[in-house]
Image (cartoon, each protein chain N blue to C red):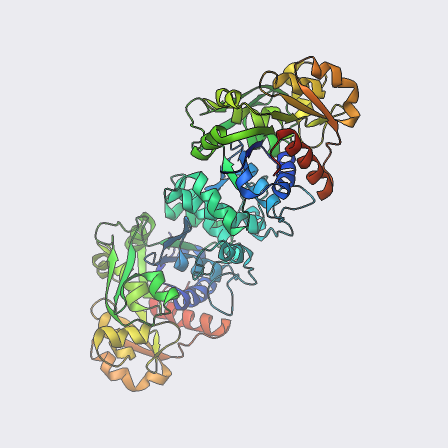
Length: 315
Length: 315
């Protein structure tokens, strides 16, 4: 009999941290990490998958600890040379990181699906847990702002999330298929975890794919969401700002809980948000209060262990 | 009235050295350097134009002086990372060099012709003399060897010219058009110089393009070839080996002179080959004996000055 599978849905840095902890706690056949690809973009002809790479580099122990993304001790000689050639280099790709994108682009052009390409890259980086793109079809997050309609990376990197967001859309999501490994993981999952990733930018694209919400609803085991908002603030990124811009209410873990209402059974909030417990319980969740800030490796493993206990997937 | 134009045909390192000298002696409006693109190849999705880059980097004063190609003091972090991803990295591209290929590929994909892309790159590298690809259409040198049919770079770089060559062909040459700037230079040229480049691999592809031989024949001024063979040896590369394999006679400047017979009016040989003077004259050439080995900057300028005097293009 195969192990009880935990399906984790993740985006960038916050999701990658919990995924790192989960991969420490669970063996490869007990964990599938499905990652947002709505942030993918082509730079200078190279297919960049920021969230997939952040999770892969983090699990490989090779992520830049200063930023939470990119590779440790990477150099930027190509980027500097591109700048000298007059190329706008607001999207900063390191030299070693570029090799990943060159390899990915080459394999995609040769006709391989992003799932297989990701598998190949993970093997090369020594990652044995399954990191799966949400879809092999293109989905692109588009941000409608007071500066106009921006691609995700224009909004996120070039404009540093400063523009006020009016709406988000996920181009291609209606027709994209969840990747085969994602579909299989939904069918096999004993439990699901929504990592503390940005609900609008990281998890909404995954949930927008046809059949995903229905599939997750059909999972009978625990479905656990962890709030990326602690004491009204996002640990990293624009989650709090977006919550305020798109829901017109102060950013709290309660606003996040409202978004996953009906989808998840458990909601994990930080000790600093203990005061919100009853509000979140009112949505029908089993609420768990614990330390959710992941600063050290021990933090990541501890939160992952809590999730796995709730999920009932520990061996 | 516009200046008298010298049209130089060049390939890689040897051609680039003379082109460097010519660019020191002549102003930009008196020189057009047309470069072989039969060596172009796509690596990891990136369009690499080795001969164009060698000439551009040399004229920019930025070429690696140790190899004669690639960029000075380049690093290889991307290449090392590609190797760790399991990619065969027999074609060694430096980090700064890669930026050139990324930029070229991006502009080509955006629909620009190789001529315009080369112009853009040259401007960025501070090169003001015209470096022109022989064609904007793909031409690919294919080498039929005792190891089988190889692409040019497989033969030249991967197998280091070791396989015995049985025949060469230039795929696409019959239908490719000489680039517009090449056609214009042929029409305007007061004189032509065939740089001391490999006659089979660097100059033959240029001469194989439709109308080029006829156009050069119609140029009434001096047409000067410089032997890349000195005392039976090529200064660099497989010219001597190829001469022996493809003509079944010892490699001398005489064999090269035979190849350009009827096309050129002047043939420049090295002092070491003085003994061959009458044999070359017998082909109908005006023979010039001088130092043709280009080791120092002074060598390059001196040979260029000799060529310009013969060509009658000095102001």
